[in-house]
Every structure is written in C-alpha cells, then in structure tokens.
Length: 520
Image (cartoon, rainbow, N blue to C red):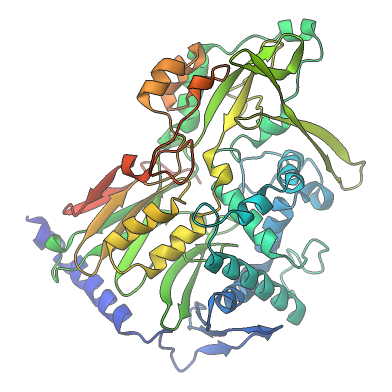
C-alpha cells in the first residue's frame, strides 16, 4: 500500500491536533473547571492556569516573570525531586545523606554520594559555572536565558516561602532550601556534561599519582584489545541508559500537506530525569508547549503553532582522552613538545554526615581532568610515566537552553537549523522536526570533540588505535602540540566540529531515529 494511504488516518489525527493548537489563544483555552493561580513575590508574578489533568499554562509579561511562573509551578509539582538535585549540584549529598549512598543518576554517573560531591564541589570551588555565565552570548547564555534563570529561582523560592511541604520525601527536611540563579545554572551545567565529565566522575575523583616508582611499576598499562572491547560495550547504543524514538513526516506523505511529528522520548516517569509538561506564553513573543527537564527553564521537546520538534540520544561520543607523557622527575607534571607543564591541583573538602570532612585532590590539565578510568570496566591507570586526561567540550557549554528557547520561537524547520547554527548548544541529542509548511528535518547537530579521521590517524596512541575504531573513543598523544583538536571556521569555540560538518537530512518523505533497546 502507498505510504500516503497508509498514513492517512494518522495524518488526519495529527492535522486535527495541529489545527486545534494553532487556533488557541496565547494561553490555551481553559475548561470551566480549571484552577487559576496568580503567584507573586518581590515584583515578579505570573498567571498559571491548570487544566483538569494538572498541566500548567503559564502566562507572563517578560522572561523574568515567565521564569518565575515556571519555577513556582515546578516546585508545586516536584519540590522534593528538585531539592534533591540542588543538593547534588552543590556537592552536599554526603552531608545530608551520607557518603556511601548513591545518587539517582539523573545528573551524573557517579556511583557514590562522596564521589559526586567531590566533583560538583570542585566545580563550585573553581567558579566554573560563574565563568560560563560571564561569557557574552552566543558563547555564553543570552540575556533572555539569564532572566529566565533569575525568575525561575525567585519562583521556586516564593513557593517555598508561601507553602507548606506535605510530601513525606522531604517534609521538614533541612536540605530543602532556597536557591539562586547560579544554582539553576549549575544544574544546567550538570545536564550538559552528562556524556563527558559526568560519565567519568568516579574516575576523576579517584585519580591520584603513584605513591612511589615501585608502586607505579606494579601497575600494568591498559591492554588495547581489552580496552577496545570495554569501550565498545560502554558506548554501544544498545547498552545506553538513555534513548528515544522520533519520526517526522514530510507534507508529501500526509493528507493535508503539513508536516507531522511523533516524539517518543524514553525517559523515566519518576526521579530527577523525568520530563515536566507545561505551556509557556509571553504574549507577542513566545507561545510554546511541551516537556522540560526538571529544573530547566525552557521547553526542551515541544511545539508551537508552526513547528514541532523532538530529540533522540546521539551515537556521537562526546568525550575523548589525551594520553599524557609524564615528567620523569614529577608524576604531576606532563610534557608537551618536550616542555613540562604542572597539573593544576584542585583540593576539595566535602562535609560528611556523622563523620569528619573528607579532603581529596583532583588533578587538571590543559585538556581536562586526569581520570583513572571510565567505569570499572575501562581502567586508565596513572603510572610514573603515563596518565590520561578527559576532554569534554560540553564543559564550556551553557547554551543548551538557548537552543531550546530558539526552537520555541521558530516558525519553520529552517529556523530550527538557524538556531542550531547560532547557539550550537545541544550536548548529546539529535533533532527531528516538522513544520506546518510540510518540511521535515533530521540533524545530528551537537557539541562534539573535533576528532577528524586525519587527526585520529596521525595522533592516536596504540591504545587509541584500538579504542577509536571499536567505540569512537579517541585517545590522542597529549605530548604533541600538533595533536590539539584544532578549530572549524563556523564553530562557536575551538576544539569542536562546526555546524557545517554535522549530518543534516531535509525534506525526506520521513525521517526517523529510534533506539533498539532501552534499559530501565
């Protein structure tokens, strides 16, 4: 049967939905049974109308007030989950829950509260996120996004001040506290580095130089074949804990000639990685509906009256390793073109519940942090001659929410592409989109380390020559300056691929990306 005929009923249903959506006033029409809230505090306010299914429709006059309404509504729905995440990004899990407990995995792959805290408190002590906030757009967040974050924090805090928590998960808990714009940005940073530094937190916080040359000589170098197999398993799509489905149909395949999108994100129903549904409206400026990651200020997957978009997790590897040749006189110095460079020591102290504070030192290089492994299955031992540093280009990326905000304002799939070109903010997802003019789009436009085939061929170490073909994990020779990642003319910063190097498929009859296996 012809594809057009097979899709007729589905397309008609989608067309009906699109028509209803396009005919709604700036904030969706409410049934007579809807609840209206008008929260306000310290000069900020919003109107929140809840449908019978509890979906908030937030209307505000500008971005700060829209953020206020969004923060208020998220707190009203998920205060305990949100507060738990802020404990994580402030490096205080061991203080409140003990060092041996495990985070829920929503903001990193850390297996223990202590390792999570050592990393996130290190980020906090180093002022990493403050530095990213200070960068001018487009390399840093836009003024509109900063206003959204400021308002979100104010709305969250206002809800805390004006309401009593009844959820037993955090009722009367000392760890539920007011937050700042910086806390909201720290949460966004954690989401950005999930596939890079966030994946390597246990290895970053466990890395330490050998105590003596004798101890170092007892440590075997990684076996290339075993490491390749481990890396392949670690980064294989079928073993991923994240993934989604999405399909966009071109107007040539639908009954009414308009584009049609089906988004099926595979994210949990509970916990810090769940989606939260809402409509956000600034009359004359923004009117978007869809799903947000908890703690973010924007709609991450959604639609307006012209465009709909969804995301799936990419297969692009968002990190690479640099193999360091160490100074024979000092295992905390490494050589680049024969010249020694001292590692930067980041000494971090974590308060611990019912115990003495724990102090550890992390070691950072021009490439990123020294790492002792990527999970237990891929050890990267620090010897007297060799260590490994992890490069994560998303560690300088606080632009993802600007990308989502641009999508929310888009009037066509071309606008979606233009937003990706301008912001270059998606860390680890593909984009699938359709518009009311019948256009379809798929693109893997994301922030990836600029590992060209030529660079991998010229600069891979023996370990890298095994891991890169097997898994996409490049291990480059960190002792050579000519093995730096370089720059593309259209890239927003050095070391990443520019948008023109990213795969794009436009106006195919349909575009689809699906994951074959998702672990619960």
